[in-house]
Image (cartoon, rainbow, N blue to C red; front, side):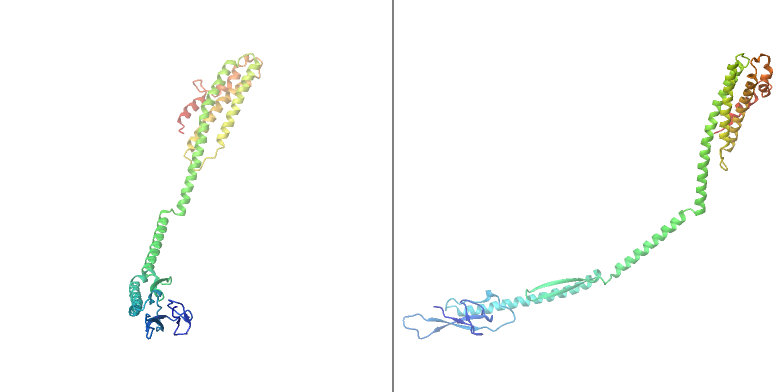
Length: 334
């Protein structure tokens, strides 16, 4: 039967092979003593004496507790206990020295680099695990002088660049009066171009009217002495219709608004004059038809009928307005 164990600190019974008291937590160890006076023929009886080790501030790992299994190893167990305690203390001291060295290195290195990025490094020693924990605190209130200088320089450069751009824009932009003048000139040019295009349409219509007038004159020369009154009346009506159409065309041209300072003012007046010549050419024929149809038989009234035509004829016997038109029209440069 194993010898019962009791805690020398609080007297509570201990479990076999326990390293700590389950009541007060005090560490325990075993020491074996040989009890003399054992009966003859019997082996010495081992007696276990429980002694309380002095408490230290550093906790003792369970693997450092030595167990005595036989009465032949008491000295070796005691030496193992002291050896384990020494290793633990040495580890703690080494961890403390390492923590101080790291802390000092961090502070020295942080003075050179911590100020540039506005961060503060704080090292804390974790005594329970023998490790080191580094905490970096960001201080946004600390400004970087070089960055501020660069920022100010960039701002100044940007301001100068904007100022240069504004100055360049101001110098390159035309003055309001110049812009207004340019705009007015552009509008005037557009208006004059539109006037030119319309004038060209009237100018191109003149040859067609001239050909129709020639056709009316030829019909008159053929039929003005015919005894067929209805034929002569029809021919007279055709001439009058053409004269009315030509007059409307001339009125439309005269109603155009000539732009001030137009480049086509001279051509406009020349085209208008050509319409007047053609109206006069056709007008004398219309007058001759009016006299002609007033007689059922024009045979005795030839000179009277031809009198309006002869009045507009030149000395060579050709219509004077026809000659003027044919001379002026090719001179119009559009």
